Image (cartoon, rainbow, N blue to C red; front, side, top):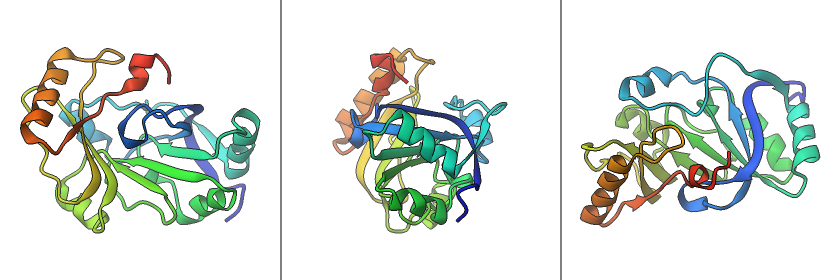
Length: 204
């Protein structure tokens, strides 16, 4: 893999993981641009964290330089998007692994994740049969977004952690969606509540 290979990146930033099993963990977020599953999200009324009009191309070498300059104390990367698996490859993941980075990924389930990823979070935006095909061995966590009135998820794969997250209104937690998700968790007994705590903390 050539270090001059390019990725289209929306943003790179160092912050704390705000959701799920790794909440509070310092991590470098590399948000990749674009998503082939975006229409499914728009149809479901889910607003993506990534806008699709801009983005900058970074070589692998430039990303490594950014990491060394801006967060030399951190050896954890979270690949997110958009849909990171539209661009990320086995070879790219291996380069960062060789540099000692723990790598998590947040994906819609549209594609299998590259070999070498250490922690897989699927927030499903595609049909369950697609997820079952792409993740036959399961994942570390499933994180479903729910609006008021939507039923408990019926996943097609197993996970170490099952999360329900209320759909937010931008940086504001929607109280009706939150109450609905709390009730789903209490009534079911297996699913756990995950808030986008970085919004409460007022950080990226």
